[in-house]
Length: 118
Image (cartoon, rainbow, N blue to C red; front, side):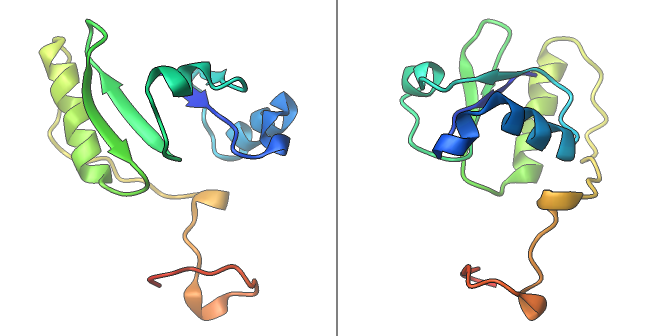
């Protein structure tokens, strides 16, 4: 697995800020810094976040734009791993969000930010 960080705002170009955020989110896999949007443009991407799953030959086999579809995404990962000979349990992982990953509590918002749909 390789992550790619393409900044949306200027402060997100700072590698120290990216390292700090990766630590807070417990991301320990490699993450490329795409400040010049080379990878972003190669995929003709226009979404934050965007997820691309590639097979062993480098072909895009699945893509997800925006948040959500986590179960389907995990099943697609398991399918690609099985094709490559890895054992898959067919059970979805249980994820316990931490820090910034925890969803907002709409009953206790202390911010003018909007949480549409909640």
